[in-house]
Image 1 (cartoon, rainbow, N blue to C red):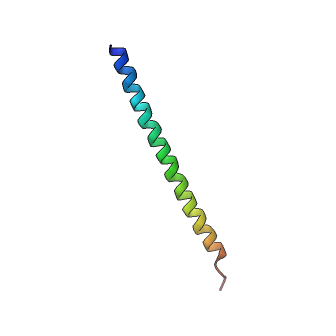
Image 2: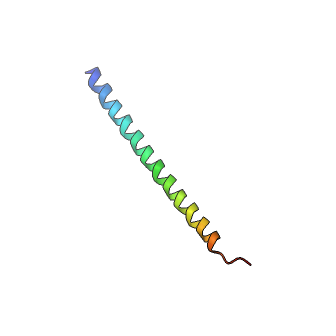
Image 3: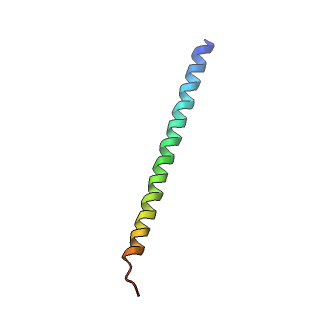
Length: 48
């Protein structure tokens, strides 16, 4: 019984960890896309 509870708890923690990682990666890519867009916007500005 104790082992089953431990396994269930481990799976729940693992799932939460995976969700956090995927959210972190998604946020990272969004920031990268924003930075990239801003970088190209600066490049494309006419030089005065």
